Length: 66
Image (tube, rainbow, N blue to C red):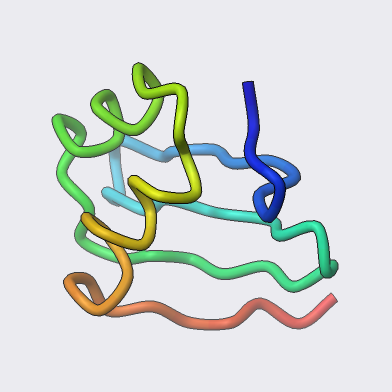
């Protein structure tokens, strides 16, 4: 189940990169995200809240241009 703001997300364990596509169309790569954190996000029902509390402002990120 996704959130009202997250359209899709994916994780690359080799690079520890969490890619999040927002419903607005913006795409961000969150870098150096441990796999444990990704698995916790995957398991939660409130993905947007988890992202805000546990990933944003804690890990470096880059916006991906379409």
